Image (cartoon, rainbow, N blue to C red; front, side):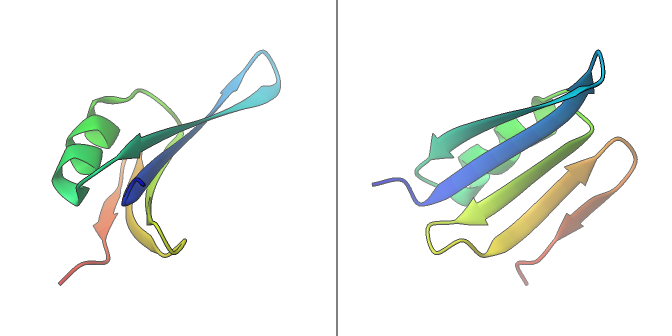
Length: 64
């Protein structure tokens, strides 16, 4: 089972499009998330905890 999920959301033609991708490690998920073009990209743990956010202008990391 995957340990991290990347959720990407972007607006296109007035509709919100959401995609979810699964990765085994945080590092893989973060690398992928930072390469995506979207309005908001978030990384969640297997338990649903938000651990990283990438937006058009801001990145935040919840891991210490």
